[in-house]
Image (cartoon, rainbow, N blue to C red; front, side, top):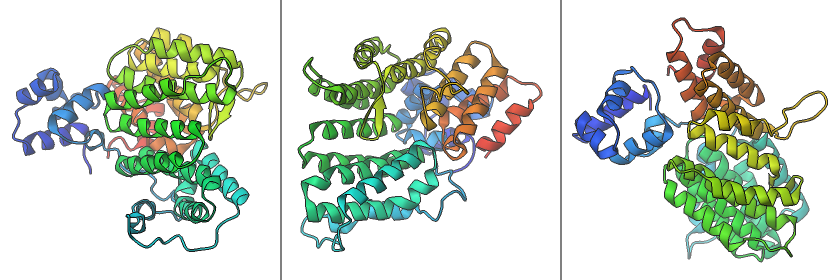
Length: 398
């Protein structure tokens, strides 16, 4: 898939025999916006607007934003097709002979391998994860087949990792399959929190498919089901808090304020008072501040976004920072968006470059970074070195 958003929009519209006026009416947007996008006078639009256009055209939102695999040579020998094949193996069909017939990996060794792979993911080393996933899922299946319930967690988490990576590189179809596999496997065990947490993965894929109401409902309903009491421990609060955090993105995508989710999660984070790790994610007061920054940046409230961002300590020589890896990178992108909306174009570009330094391969796959770079470029009569570097890194002209 090539070309600009406008070119892809025009092609999809014409294939469906729609006029610009008809598309605008069906999507509930202005004809002027459709015209500007198609003519290249606007190079990007808010994700909520793009979702409306995609729904009106009956295409995936990824079709318009060109959410394709941008790993390039950074694959470390991995293959998206190999991940597809292990997720969609015919042996998983009822009545088919299983291909899980090898020697089971010792459980502690398998758990360490899953943890290493998640570590690579959070560091943005997507090539490492892609290379490891097919073998990791295969080993986890064999061990689960041999040991049953004790091996539920590593297999579910291997599927969840596949879901995250496939969604990051634009393969939401495979991401949804992997998330569903994670939920099904987790349901066979006796860990309710694991099962609930896997629904957050499912919700996140729905978000990236533009299915915002469903995404919010999955996360919010599961949060209600596991809402902790005063007798529950830190792990229960962290799992619940992360589900509330997951519900925020689809809420703001529907152009609603997430105040209630932020209030509840903030109370839970305050009760914890520190970072608590649960299933290779974590929850803490900075988690809530990070999501508040994201929410207000999407809602075009830059003042509130930047105010929330001040509650997060950046890395320095005296402190490692409140956020790590791609979580810090994602937060920087939200700060960049807020700075641009507040009229600080050069600060926004500098912040985007800082986000790129966190994990260059991850950064190439971020729609917000590409959209914001296009917005910055549109405002410059002569491109600055920072904008040129961003455009080259993101391939916004391809």
